[in-house]
Image 1 (tube, one colour):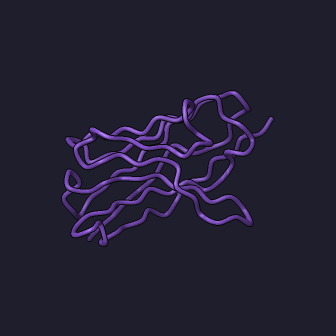
Image 2 (spheres, rainbow, N blue to C red):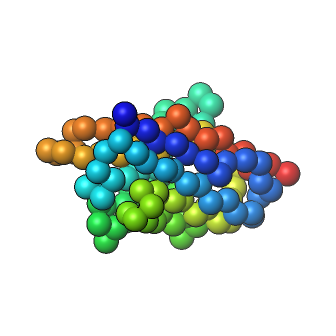
Length: 119
């Protein structure tokens, strides 16, 4: 069965760094575009970053450009989100998503990992 398992969240001070991981299983990881989303309390879920199946192209929300880096290791079926220069407004539950198939209509979601940026 399909599984996406996020890890690496936690409490960090402003200006600090965290690295999130999302381990995938149950589908052909190398054929799926992978994304990180986040959802803060009382807000809608928003797209943070995306990487194409082969890893050649990445896209970022304006709010995280220059601070976050998405990457993937197709040999390990894992996607990462390196988060630097963290701000309190980055506090949210972070989710990874896989999208594959025709027009990327087949999607899978992880259960989320909490990131809290606070002093």
